[in-house]
Image 1 (tube, one colour):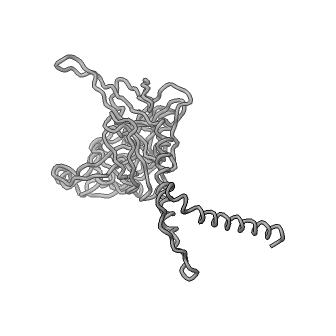
Image 2: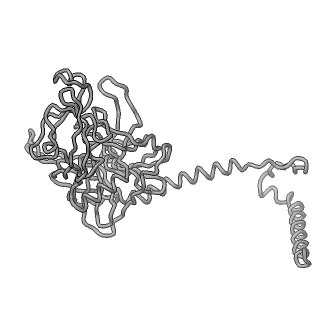
Image 3: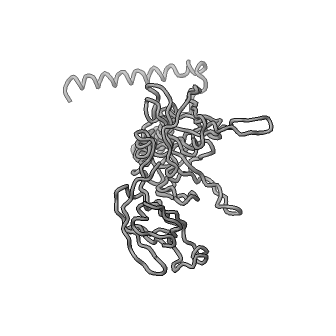
Length: 380
C-alpha cells in the first residue's frame, strides 16, 4: 500500500469513528423525535459468520424477470393483433334479411397490411373488416385461403402498420412458456393468456378426409374468437396461429380442459408466402375419390384387406387414370407411407410436390401390386 492510499484509508477511518461518536451522543436527544429505537442487533462474532440469503434474492429476481418478459411480449405483439369480422351472406328471418357476423382474430405480419388468420374465420364471407388494437375499424379483402392448413391471408390498406415477427417453430420444446393473444368470445379484444407448450407434432382429424398435422398443443386458454390469433414465445415472436380446442372426447365422453392447438409458424410462413404471391397453395393431385377402409367397409364391399384407402372412382385423364388405377382398388402405401384411417392419403400426398413420381402399393381383388404415378398440380 503506497503512502497516498494509507492516508486516504486513515482519513476514512477517522470520519467513520467521528460519525459513530456523534450518533451515540445524539441518540438520546433525538429519540423522542425519531420514535422508538429499533432493537439492538447483536454484533456477530468472528466464530459465527452472518448467514447469507442469496437464494431468496435470486428467486425474487427470476420471478420479476419472467413477469417482465411476458409484459414485454404483450406490449410488442398486441398492437399487431386484430379482430377479424366476417360478414356472411344475408339470411332471411322473421324480420326480413339479416347479415350475420362471425368474429375471430388475426395478426399483421407485414407493415403494408397483410394479416394471417384461420381459413375457418373468413370462410363463406360476403365482406371482411378488422378492428385494430386501438379500436380503429378498417375494411379488409381476402388474398387467399387454404382449408387444408386452415390458414388465410387478408389485407387492409395502410403503411408502417405494427407487425409481429414470425419465429421458428422447429426449435420449440415441451414445457416452453407461450402467450396467446386474441379476441376472446369476439368481444374481449387482445385478451392475454399464458401457458406452456404441452406437446408437439399433434394431428387433428377434420372429418373431411384429411388431418391437420404437425400442430402445437398448448394449455394456454384459447376460447371462441381466439382463432387466428398469435401464439408467442417469450422473445415476442409468433410461433403459432391458434386454431382449435378440444373440450370433450364426444357424446358422453371425458370433458377436457387446457387442450388447445396452434398451426406452427414454419407452416404459416410457407403457406402465407404462397397465398400472398399466387392466392393459392400448390398441392399435388392424384385424381381419385376414396374412403378409408374399416371393418364395416371391408365387409360391405367384400374386400380382401381390413385397412387402407378404397378407391371409389377415378377421374378420366388424371394421373391415377393414366397409371391404371380402378375403382375397387385398395391403396396400402404411398412410397413408404402406410395409408389408412389414421394416416389419410391426402396427408401422404402433401409430403410431395407436383411433378414427383411416387409408387402406390395397392390390393386388387386379393392380389398386391405396385404402380407408379406422376403427380400434377391440384387445380384451384
